[in-house]
Length: 598
Image 1 (cartoon, rainbow, N blue to C red):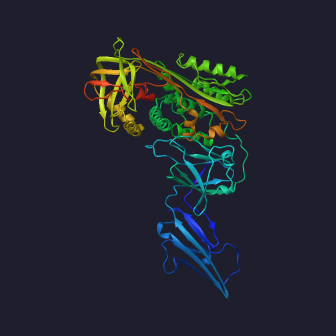
Image 2: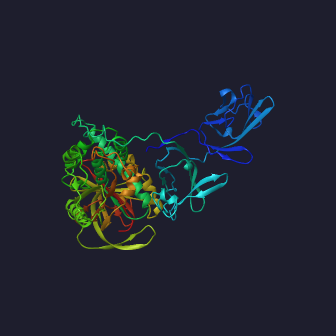
């Protein structure tokens, strides 16, 4: 169910013995105050509205309008000047009625969300990225003026725990999801740190559920639209720009949940998996995946361009997508044909037992990564509907070789500890180096065979703060500008020292898919182009990245690494650094990562 963000009518009505109604509103919203809460036959009554003791007719607070012959007062837009007491006085014959409102304008309420009864929605909250997350935030619901109750986020032994869940425990993103909304869920929610610091205030409006239309794939079962202009000069640049944007978005999500440890992923692999699934997505689900992978809506040539990109990279990169599905499902013939056409992958039915499926999937992964990654799943539930996998393997050699004589050195970790590591070393290595002010980092470009380059971004010091400063500046625009700058920088003879490393990392893909705005994939999405019988849920998505940096060159089933420190001809990557493996031929990032502990 889609959420509609609104800017109007943010109210919490709390009735007290004083008969005064207390209202909290946000700046910019619309407020309408009824004079009476019941029907009346007062036809000749004199109705007067007052604001802080003065008649509104003589001193209006700015944008208050008396409506319906005085039976209501409308204020729009709300500003701080509208805070105070509003009184409606009704006089007719010997009858006098009065109703009072006390309005507080609260600028701390950051979000207003309107949802349908029975829907599922998210309440956003974030720790500052500069802070260290040691405990989850606390979520409260205001029950009365000055009173609130603690929500149980994820404790299934309580009533709240069945419906309220913290999406990313011990993450900078402390968003919670609330399922099956009821009218009583309306109100104001606060997110606070364990120390009591307010981080987010959300107002929820719950409205009656409209007539539910049964789910149907009618109108959504046709095949993906053909690419009308395969020779267009704009298709490839669109994919290149989208891939760079998607890569940096992924990096920001991964570093949020993993602020200081080694990190490794292949954006081209993850994008390939989601694009493969997009082939069968329709309606809102299609638009959500298009937003997630940063491609324009209805870019019909995406799959054609992904195929061209894979063919262009075939000499150095082996990439394969695969969809495994429940044998009781009959996939669309059109989806199967296009899956083979664009991704060289015929969807595979799962087998009867957990052991058979686990062995089948892990054998497929080992084969597609040249045995660099031999295990991706531990088990497969018999109730599984869909599993989405993508494997990628890269092998590249240094254009300039390192000395073969073994040597060891000390690598400085983020906490200042020293660890002994085997080294790659050369006294006069040809490498392009430059300080990039926009990133506040020294950058080195290492040429690899297969028309690829390895970029190392080295922060100013080995501190976590300097590392995070560089990462925060790594937008897709800044990275693409850095690539162009380094391509124009002439190589020079430099004494190079790099750590030999071997990384094998499996980031949480299910968590990242949620952060990409694709939670609906796990709860029932419109994949009518893939399976037209009913809604389908994605049970699992996996990504594993492998990297080895040796004397011969770079071998990766996921990512790559390196780094350096000084701007004069000496390059020592013996402290934390960020790396990008970039295809010069396809002009897209293949792997992205960071090394903090080799």
